[in-house]
Length: 366
Image (cartoon, rainbow, N blue to C red; front, side, top):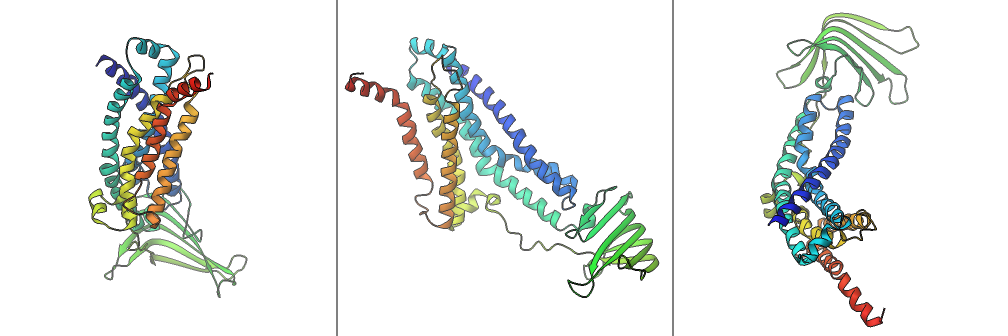
């Protein structure tokens, strides 16, 4: 029990440290992509943190098992380099017992991964889709950032506002839009609208209008004198709304119970993936224990790179098998079980490698 507490404390401390570093990198990369969308005016700044929070279970789904694998490699490798593991073996602790303690620790990681994969990730993806739907229902004027010129409508329109009033209306509005005259090959007409204030309103038919107050409208072809200037007290402009009816629910957002009731190959592929992420934990633990055994003179990082490559190969094969299952190239009954069976066999071979090498050495006389 003392050894189990010692190994657990060292392994989980290292696992959380590795997971934290990888999570920060992953979240930073994703957050930068969301910031670009917010800067482009396709997403409001208020939803950025909510999106990242709901995406966390999806990130942790694979980060937790990988961090556990790396933690075993680092902790056990250090124990071998510092000769602590040799002392423990000389005191009667066998490799089989070490494997048993590692598998006990993997049960905790499996529970965490199951919680993430089967429940929290689908729940988070559902919240993400709800936020994205609400963002797509916004007009381009709902995503304006005060004090910044924003290119909208694929660059055909540039909009600027000085700020927002306490009621949410625009103040100091500038809109410049280019329109092509006489088809796509004709000259471009520029329409510039300035106003002291503006607000969005909905008419009886449900259409949304941007209503500008106290301003001017300039229209003409750049380089010519034929400009039309109109002063107005109130000016209305129809606002295009994004249609979101075609936004399909992604499989990652479907609950696990609903996947079980769905008989399509796509649902089977998603369900097998969620189960595979859980089964990944004990299999990589089986591989990590013998792979972490190093010669003290070699250093604790000797086998870290090849072991990590083997772990990523495992995940890539699971991903490839999932794609094949989704396309119907693999029977649903087979699923991804064969990949796990293959790597369990590899783990057993690695575990028995020293014994096989000794037997082979005796047979050959070397």
